[in-house]
Length: 108
Image (cartoon, rainbow, N blue to C red; front, side, top):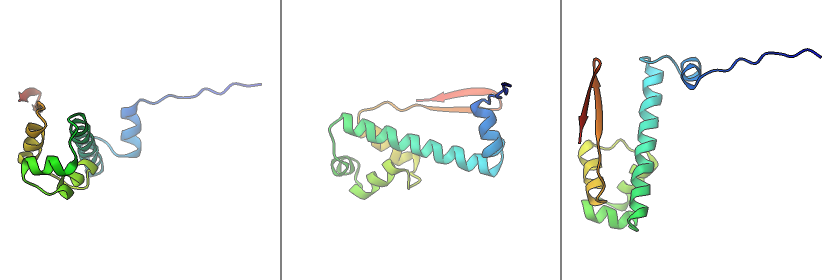
């Protein structure tokens, strides 16, 4: 019985192969969608930990329940202002990390 060698791939290699290399439109779109999904999950988790309904959170920041639902389900690209209002209403800290040509900048 002969054994075959299996090649293993890193996640980065798989993304490069099946989604596109970093810097391509396909990869940028994928990374954006992933970021929005993660952000939506963070908002939902924080809201639930505060025992708030979508309607209650919406009232705190002056938007409809449907807007909160869209934020949580990642079907809406929200403004930074809205995101900051949501996390402020949830009494949660939010930090932004920005990298500019090998310089790391952190905004709180």
